[in-house]
Amino acid sequence: MKKKILISTGGSGGHVIPATIFYEQLKNEFDVFLTIDKRGSKFLNLKKYTITVINSPNLTDNLFLLPINLLVLFFFIIKSLIFLKKNKIDFLISTGGHMSLPLCLAAKIFNIKIYLFEPNMVLGRANSFFLKYSNKIFCYSNEIINFPKKYSSKIQLIDPLLRKEFYLIKSSVKKEIDSVINLLIIGGSQGAKVFDDELKKAIIDISKRYKLNIYQQTSSINNKNLEEFYNQNNIRYQLFNFEEDVLKFIGNANLCITRAGASTLAELTFLNIPYLTIPYPLAKDDHQLRNALFYKNKNCCWLLKQDELNDEVLTSNLINIIENKADYSAKKNSMKKFSYQNTWNKVNEKLIGIINEN
Image 1: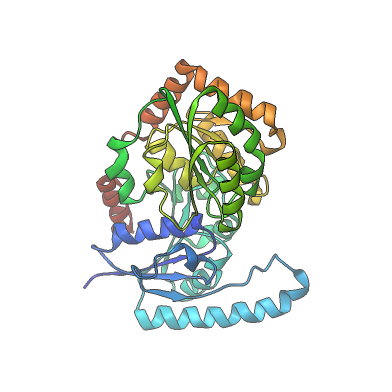
Image 2: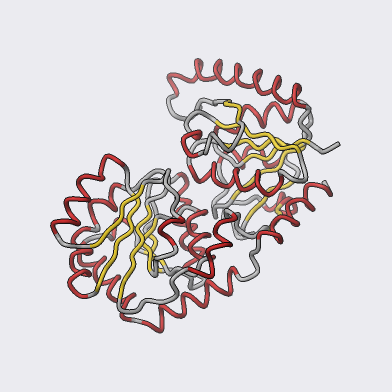
């Protein structure tokens, strides 16, 4: 009989997408269940996955609502206990966030083995709380800045989790900057309105110097505004939202401007697409800046802080990137060295091996 694994996720795409990769990696070896909160379900293909919705209040959002939120949390802990018992779950994998709270607490009560996942360079608050109760924590690096040394033996290093499609398209990704700049702009699952507003002048300046194609992720609210901007300035473009598959556009890119979510940086690095990262400054514990610094220190990217962002600085950065072919090539070589061992089968074997031996 196959062992049963529950993957708990929710919140943003940064939590949900890795959960779906865990699911795909483990579904042939184990019976795999997936729980998600209501907010995270919009990042999931509901036709592809059978899910159970288990929400959790954010206890730090509003202290005045804390008594009510604690009652709500208690209700979802009971729901989690019933789910775990009914489905006879052997292992829980949590991709972090406050939505993991009821299921991790319920798993602890039933003495179910808990595996955490931390892709960022800062240990998340939920993971920090449950670390001492966990069997292992899957990480991309052992350089996480606030990781308690006494639990370092729990770290299991894995290659970044990538959707299978990324391995399939790697050989077809555009290789170098040539006469055409194919610029991909990604704001992440939370969107990046600042990208919609603050990049315009620099894009106009770049379009006057080089042949430019834009592939930009944006929200539906900003679509009309951006369409008017690009049409008025005679710039070739395609717009898409987060729910659309970035795989349709990423293969054309030879340069990217992006936030610094762990999944996005791992994908771009794997595909060898040089990128300028502008971390989201309000990310919890400034984890996006730490993610960006991790790759910058390995010479895989360029970094620009949002409070440094203006028309002149951005234009200057982009021109330097485009014109300095040696630095551009160095970034590609560094990315290649960083990710060349990452294969779907290697990740698959490691995940299954870790779970089976524990």
